[in-house]
Image (cartoon, rainbow, N blue to C red; front, side, top):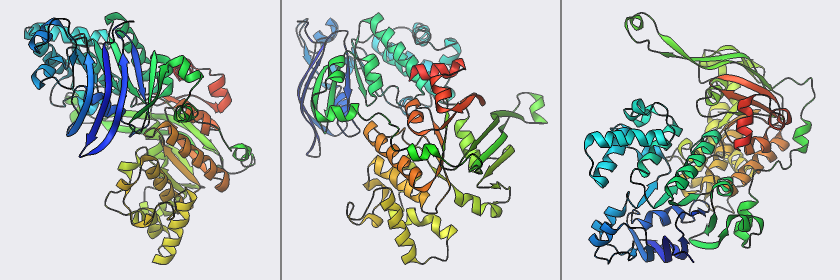
Length: 548
């Protein structure tokens, strides 16, 4: 058998005496791709960080035997040539030589991992100079070549760009270039595609696969995306609550999962459950909950040069979108970042100026805020990240009741509390399950529970339409399935209409009745779910469906 490149034995991790990883074992062969899979809180990210002792304030035990250190580093660490080293017991100075050169890491969110004060070229060149000792000119050229190798167009110009000047996919490619600067033997990739659109996700996976084959490196992929695992990995290890409950070849584990938790993850794909009643919908003559004709949204931008002194230019984010949403139906808007779908959602909420026609619940948005009270009650929103959309300073009672204080000010505190408890019960949260529920704060709940609170806040004023802006993209697969099931049940019981904004084709298949595909502000294709996704006409739609 091949000697493992990395052999982790009885890895234990604790914080302040509380154990979070409980004696796990796994190994990675040279050139192998291993996926470490599990929900948030399972311990997979802290496991990867602990291999390089990057988990702050963590107490780590066990062994992580690595055989991929070059001869110079082995000599510096005091080990004889060709001897493996234990990463968990190496002196910090020796481990510092291994980080970035023999073992590199791609972090989950490149915008926070990259330094905003330096260009991406300088940040890549810094790694090369530190690890390989090349001259500044040689480092700059090497950085440009690495950016070109990762598929970034105009690498010379992009090397001088700062992180905020790059798109999400370009930032992720820059992170990959930085990680591969010294051709490491092992790459730790922590959710490298989570924040990316489905087309970019596919491109990054192809890029990682090509670079892995070309350089012969091993990859430890940290993810909760099972489609990514099927496509990319050779083997998979499934983590639950700090334990590895199952591991083996990807094909074997997915075809014949042995552990109940593995089966639960595999069965957690979005499903179109309980929508038969909603599929019937309202009659063909029913007035739509929302209607838009030639909706156009533009932002003012500065014009360079003298012309900019006298007038402003404009960037058109939505270029004449037309749609209607019948009662009890869902319009799914899909597209990559920058397509204009979130701008469309904000205009639908009356939060952005627009031209064209837009009506909700039979009323058009007015430029005078005082005239929009009724329509604001009819159109509510559930945002992408429930942690940032809920005030950390307000208890659940104040958060859920807030809409009533505006739209039903005649209600007393007892009436508002009764309505709040009913709204929470409708989303599956009761005081029996969560003692002191109304007095708790958002940080005391999980991500899925916080999203239920956000839905309850929207429902309490009895709206007719909910704008759902990526409502499950920040959630694990099992929690995503629960929230989608909840939204389907509420639609069936209340006859709600949804404007669903997402880049996830699986969520569209589970929720939508009509689909609209957007790219660069244009509506490329629209129609029924089966027309758009099963028989797509536009090449871009076919790319989205294939990538999913």
